[in-house]
Amino acid sequence: MGADVADEARRAVLKAGLAGAVAALVARPRGARASAPLRAGTGEGRRTLELPGFVDLQVNGFAGVDFGDPALTPEAVLRAVEAIGATGVTRFLPTLITSPVEAFLACARTIARTSHPAIAGIHMEGPYISPEDGYRGAHARAFVRGADLDDFRRRQDAAEGRIRLLTVAPEAPGAIRVIENAVTSGVRVAIGHTGASASQIADAVSAGATLSTHLGNGCPSVVPRHPNVIWEQLGEDRLLASFIVDGHHLSPATVKSMIRAKTPARSILVTDAIAAAGMPPGRYTLGGEEVELSSTGRVAVPGASNLAGSALRLDVAIGNTVRFTGLPLEEVVPMASARPAEYLGVPTAGKVVAEWDQAAFALRVVRVVP
Image (cartoon, one colour):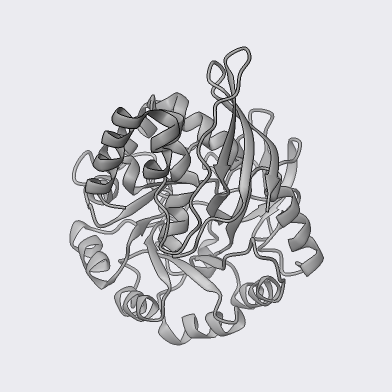
């Protein structure tokens, strides 16, 4: 969805009002069903809404299930699908992070052979990322490696062709060749966990990269004032950007500034959820490594300062984004539904009936209709 489409949509809102213009605001892929309008309910400042199903491009696990656990079973995957579906997510990408190659292959096979329409493919995040502290995030250094076309093909074969999104650091040896080949085969490529220079980012975009994975994260807490890897991606109009809006990964002012700069038309909400999502505080795993969910909702390796995924739900991310940016709900919902669906080239699925409490910035999913 380009800036001209977004401008046209805003004009439609001014002319026709919320009920008549929401279809223009919610971009959708060709062939997708028209999204149900946001329908206002009554009573105490709350509205009952009908929304298109949510789409999450980055889910490492949910409801106690770790998609990166080599012992993963189809039954566990389906339990996670059911739990995440209750939050309004009707399509998502199970995400596999950097791990021993045999662990990746085992998990990819299990996910690929688990049949459910909500599984829109696999997001391969690593191992072709920066090995440096900060940029690497919670990914295990021991299994970070250069990008290799034969290695990627082996992983894609195990996934039965279902890797739909690849996150790679442009500076990783061999990255540009892998990006070009992945894009040619229909895989979307994102830039992430990277300390790339401006020229390396430009080369990746020219090769076909089209997204920044959780922009503002997967980098050190202190970077050069300018230029730096955040500014270069934020200013690159050919890149969409995904954001984790849980209040831990990015501050409210950062979310507001980044979405304002990138524009809602090029912004996508993701959760980066791990097995701790939908669960009480305690110890869980991410790619087989132990992490801890605190009482404040923050997820980290025990004793470490850096974050390790999140316990965020996409319905909560929508409310947080309205709160942090000041944007109206009808401009935020597409970031979690039609926009990621359009990016993947798939339609949204189903309908979410939800209650929106504007005063509390709370979106409560009432039911999901397939």
